[in-house]
Image 1 (tube, rainbow over the protein chains, first blue to last red):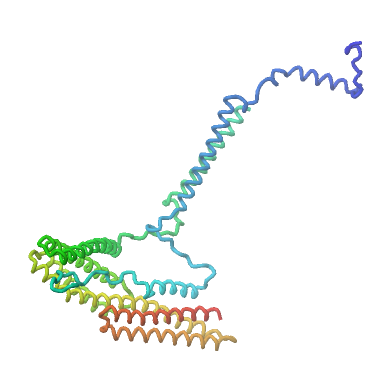
Image 2: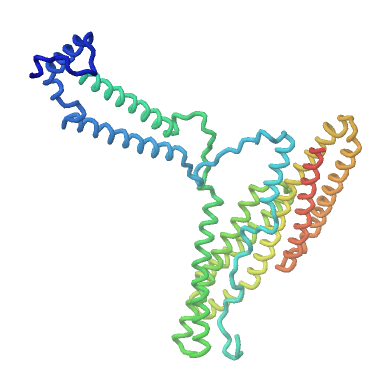
Length: 132
Length: 274
């Protein structure tokens, strides 16, 4: 006996399911060409587009980070950030804080420019004296 | 499907360009009016003078070392060559020394012009003093530059004894008065703040801590009064500040004023917490 003579020997299938099996067989037979076609991202062209897209995104990210850092950088000699009063201090406390800063700058121990360390005795040595 | 992917890519590129433009716009200063920064003039006269002073001082030190070596060789060899070397080294060192002193006096004069807390009479008097001393050193510089013979160079060296002493005296006095002025400024502001607190906080707030506040404000005023007395003492004895030793003594008094002012501010801080 061959398979065509006994089409319903598979006991895992019911008879009323027969039309479904037939449809499936028809569909799978109708699309062999579509299955053979590769997805777009597996083609050379698709892969190139995908890779260039990833590289572009990375470059964009790097540029964004670089520009953000540049905008945060402040040159200390040229610009001075205005210190805004701290929200936790009252106006009087702020005045005291400012006075403390001013007093620190007026500390007499901090002499920025003491008298120049120059010699007051630049003279022609007296050869008659032993240690002139 | 292909068109959908292409559309997606275009949308991605478009949005990326938009983000990039936004970030770049934030990075450029002209497009950020909220930025609370102000430019500072770094090429002010005082800064230029300070730079000049440092350069001249470095040059002078080298010249002084050369003079020391030449003087030593002259003592040991006593030849015409060593005499010529020491005379040339002397002249160069003396010229550079005068230049250093002139720049230093000009720095003090510029600082005096910008200083607060010094009364006008005192400021004018000190300014005149600095101008006269500067002129004295400039004259000495001119005579040193013109000195050619051994006698002229030796004379210029001995003339400096007077010039150097006056320069020292004027400089120490100027340093002391500038330091007093800085402390006086803080004292004035602290006094205004104390009076303001006395009027608006201590006298008007009636509660259980009023007496404590009154005692505190009295203590602040007493400390400030001590500082004021020290300032007046220093100002009345400023004529004695002429040497390095008297300057050191004045600096000790200035330190007392400084400590009094620190204590006053500490007390004021405590008073506000009562």
